[in-house]
Length: 87
Image (tube, rainbow, N blue to C red):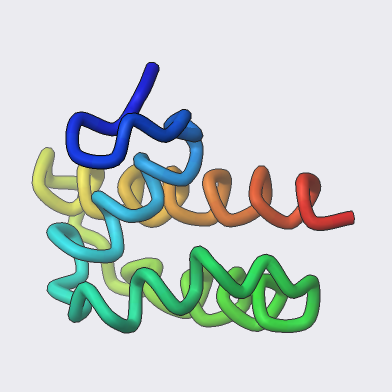
């Protein structure tokens, strides 16, 4: 898979994380890109900790709450994949 603009290879884990950061959490594109470009184990570890703090503690079991918590899990997994790649 390649980027339509630059023609560069696209990392699916990076794209998934970028999507969650940019659209799921309304993060700015600049912040999302900085996190993705850092690939620093300490930064990524802190990002995982922060993402885990987003789980709903008072989830009601509704489909919306379950979907939100699943999205948080997906973000944690995507950052974890980046962390493994940074080692």
